[in-house]
Each structure stands twice: as structure tokens, then as C-alpha cells.
Amino acid sequence: MSKTIIQVDQVKRTYEVKKGSWKKEKKFVEAVKGISFDVKDGEIFGLLGPNGAGKTTMIKMLTTMLIPTDGTIEVLGFNPVHQHKELRPHINFILGGERNLYWRLSAYDNLAYFADLYKIPRSTQKERIPQLLKLVELEEAADRRVETFSKGMKQRLQIARGLLNNPKILFLDEPSIGLDPVSARKLRDILRDLNQQGTTIVLTTHYMYEADELCDRIAFINHGELIAIDTPQNLKQRTNHLSVIECKLSNSTKQEITRLLEGANIFDSEIHEEQNVLKVRIPAEEPQKVVSLLYNLPYLEVQDLSITKPSLEDAYVSMVGGV
Image (cartoon, rainbow, N blue to C red; front, side, top):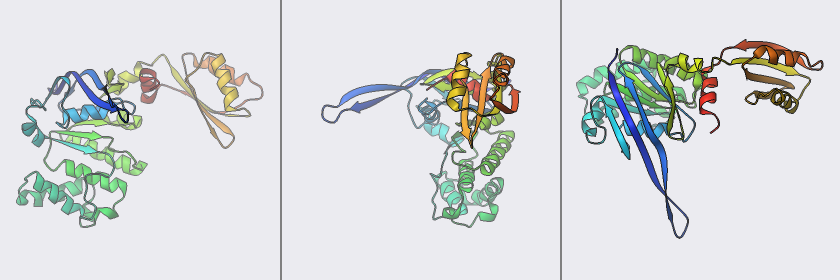
């Protein structure tokens, strides 16, 4: 059993906001409502939820940037509130997007600048920076200005920046946001390699495929509350009574198919119109009945029909529901 290196116990975070132009009225918003979980040494742990669910607030409390309103947090044996100076050298935090880089500096100079902030000796920098640039596949672009980089290259440089202090835990907030599929795949490969070398990773993401592929365990959060926490496989099995029917339908409209399915008490289907064809995704407890329903309509043309097990996205929608 791996030891616990993050312990979160009944943590709350409340914000005070003011409304009104003249007589401002104070209002308190609970961003996090008594969440508890732990993270094991060496795992990739995912926090998933809709916008405003409390994911980023939780990450900021774990990384000493916000103070909890109530509850306790322990990271690597340190209290992030009272022992933030002791904790910070052992962790790092990377935001998605293109922030936190100096675009007019080269990749090498960016890393050298941040290494100076971490008080890393110049002799160590000369060895570590080329190693990190090679790790994120940017060694050939070391002397190029960051302003010439693609989004994927900038994000890989952010990963290198986050590894300068050799953190025991790397926190990532939506690391692949805005990346094309090739860049996102490279990023996932880098994160897997880091994890295999012993780095514990805590990440938030909206991409279910990314979470399913990377994470050892996942926590679903919604409206500041913990909905479920388990391995991706176990989360998917919680919707195991459902199968998913996917097909293309012709000679009908989205409204007609919606009415047809609702008449069969199916309300969670996804229907998309593409070039006079409906792409349909239907979760069903008894898929054969739905298939018979579709094929028994003489005017309806059914193509490319398949029946599969639920995905992590299906589990997420089932548990988190509408936001």
C-alpha cells in the first residue's frame, strides 16, 4: 500500500461577494462544501466536474494559494496554511493555457529565470535545464523565443517550468486546454513518463478521455460537493446496467426521434444533425428493445449501429447530471 501524501478532511471554502451599485449587499458563496479525500504517493489523481464545481478552488488550497474557511489539509506532512514556506519547495502548480511564460525570452532563458527564483545554483541549472527541455521534446527549440511557439510547445515548456524544483507533487489545472489532438497526446505521454519516474500528479480536466487514460483514481465534484471517488473502471461499472447504442439515422428529424425515444421513457439521448443524417447516442437498460423500436419504423434508415459499454463520460453524466 502506498502511503497517503495528501489528506483533505471536511474542507470548506466560502467567498464573500458584494452585490448592488449603491447599497452593496454582502452575500456568501460556498465554493467547497466539506470535501474529504486522500491522494496516495505515486498516483495520478483527477478532479473532474463542471465549471464552478470547486476544482480550481480545491487545487489552490492544496498549493497554499488559498486558505480554507474550515476543515484541515495536510500535504507531504505539512499544513499548507501554517507551513507554506516549508511545503512550497516540494510542490509545483501549472495552469492550462499560455500564462506564466515570458514570450520575448527563449525557452532556455524562461527556465533559467524561474530557476533563479527557486534559488537553484547556476551549476545545477546548466545540467537540469537541457534535461528538462529534452524531456518535453523542446531541445531543438531551446534558443527560440516563446512567442514563436505553438500552444502545445508553450504548454510543454510550462511542464518543464513546473519540474525545475524537482517537485514530489505536480498540480495541473486543465493542462491540455486548447491543445490539438497531437499536442494533447504528447502531453499525456510526458505526464505518464513523469509519473513512472515517481512524481505524484493531481490534475483537473474537462476531457473525460484524458482522465480515463491517465488517472489511477478520480473524484467527481459538483456544486462544491464530492459526488464520487474511485478508479475509472469502477466508476464506469456503476453505470453497468446501461449499454450505449450509437447509430446514424436517415429520413427523420431530430424532433421526431426525440419524441419517439421519450415515448419509450428514454430522456438522456444525444442527437446531432450532420449533413442530413442524425448521429444518435442512446443509453439504455434494454438495448435490444430500443434497436427493435428503431428498425420497426418502415421509413427510418438505420446505419452503423453498435452497442457498447458506458464510457467515463456516461458515468460522469449519470452521477453529476445537469449543472
